[in-house]
Image (cartoon, rainbow, N blue to C red; front, side, top):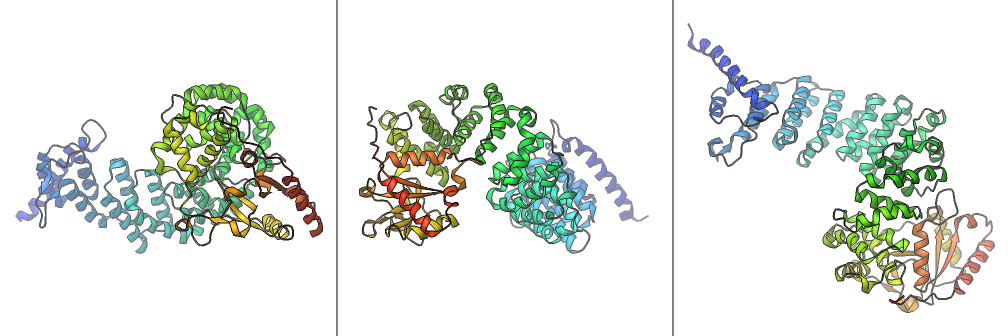
Length: 594
């Protein structure tokens, strides 16, 4: 008899027996990943008999051992290698024997077995094998779709370091997405958002144009909700899908809870087509408690209204009483968000404030932006106290490097509110560290000036203004604000420090001109709450602060301007507005004692 022929089945039996011993260390439990060190030598001895599935058991069974375990370091040609790294490497070499669906099943098995502990090298090996399978036509675009969904389900297990390989799969999907049915394409959108792949998300929305009627409504709502993860990168592309949903809304097929989720998603994206908003409101207004059944959902619905500048009486009259009863069930950070959203809507609610304020004075887990937001809300309502501002501004004080441009602008608003006496607290009354935060915000500007995009209305007003006054400057900086037009003579215009200027100098209003200058603000639709002629809280605060500091502010209202048909009428309108502003009396700043 041939000794080699007899040894082969013998080795296979021993390998099978070894796998049976490793099973208890492969499955989740008390012994997971802690196989006896004595079995490592057996693995090395019988490695030639292992299948890819066997190697996955080996990797899992030893993964909990520390790298400080000397017995698990194996000698190699260049330097020693840890046993788990060696097992992952051997596992990778066996993947070439898998075909088609076996590759996808193995990837799913790896994630299921290892959870958040999939080694980065194994991610790369698995994904490269998938790409190779597509290139050799073992796998088609539907298989790549399935793999991508698996990766998204593993998020945040999926490591950023392996993202390069995943982007290769993303490019394959972008090229082949029109060959996939509409429903699976729509389900791919949330996966792309989870992995931060805005290009694929855009391809999804583009592919769905004209096919939205083939996708169920809940999937569309989930698609829009997931778009919020990508922020402004995709919001314009989502608008088309929103418009295509209108016919279904008109048919009365949308459940109020889905309508509320839809509105919340649009609020997160700051996209709110007027026609869609009009179609959503009837679903939510009569049954707010059904549309948003939990306290957190009701808080999110209020947040959507705030982001959309939507002061719907029908919604808010049903929502606010429910929120008053909910405040004890919300965390302090969520309660502070509610207070900020009330500021956005210019609504003062004493009961909600009385619930949030005491907890704010003891809160130590606000995020930087939430802290700045609630400080601005308190300052706007004149409800700030030294203790409340201290707790709200401690996060940006401690983590000042996390204050982004928007947060810096809002900090400057808070500082100006305190300085002019609008906040309900004076600067000397604040703790020195908080004074320092506000003073630094006052003198700090973004390293790169914001890019201002003039509207057509603003450009038209600017052309007419040249015939009224010749010394107008556009986008004049004044504290946290950019004034649409400022009357600043050329010889005294100052600019930002040269090292902070990107391409062109940014005009700034000199101190000696504050009480002499007239500024013109062009108030377009975004300065007002939707479907109303009432200024938003931000516009009201801006006017209050500018006039309190002595500026004479003329306002050009978009609904007035639209009624003017001739250039002569427009010139007369501007002259009246500027003359009226020049007659405004200077409002002195309150003294600290006041």
